[in-house]
Length: 106
Image (cartoon, rainbow, N blue to C red; front, top):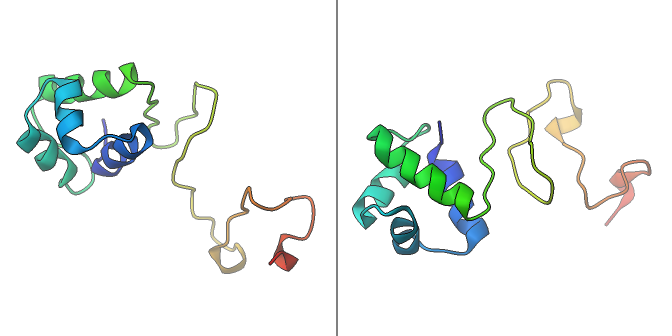
């Protein structure tokens, strides 16, 4: 449904702390702290998870599931899939012109 990493990243994108996230979702601060300290998928009462997800989506956050395409437009952040056989596991960066020789950029 949502991972602790997604929750922390969503808060960072919104520029809010855990207390503000709790207020936005209508849940307690210890609930947000517990959810964000989870390992992997956030566990909790379904109603609480729904409140948090709706609050994030209402604030403009798009939560993208594993292997799911993004439905929105605009900027975003997601983990890149590790590619086997890639040179040193390097993933092309948007900082460099991918059509050119990114290896020579300093």
